[in-house]
Length: 215
Image (tube, rainbow, N blue to C red; front, side):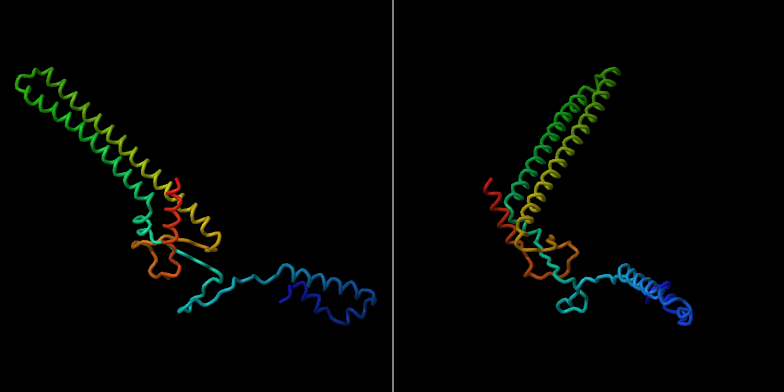
């Protein structure tokens, strides 16, 4: 539908035009053409993305959309760097537990000595033992928190490094593949159906391992 001001021009009575000098006609025609031009420019129809029907479904699928996936469980099982990282995490956790266990043993030894001396302790000695015991507990909790935070940061740094290695490899890998999305899949993911033709797990594992062995 033409804009209102254009329609208004079109419904001007012909008798009115005859009453004017014929020289006004070019001006009216120019105004009409200008209105049409504005309409064409500012009322362009919106372009709708092309859709094609997906296989075995009536739902529309965006044309040229390409997606691939990799199995996260398989990557964790076969990526050599991931195995080494897991060994590092277990080793650091064992060191932390060993240190805390050593502190506990030393404290328990001290408590046993106090228990033996308890019958002969003076009130002052008892108070000193209680203060030392409270300080031991505080030292243990501070050291435990420090070690746990250090382990957590270490683990997060390793996770970030693994993710970066995967992302960097996939960026290079996708230059010749042209996928719009590459996602990870595991048993707890939201994906309920997948096409094995788009499974790039083997390519990803082989490429990552090859890059890791070079270092």
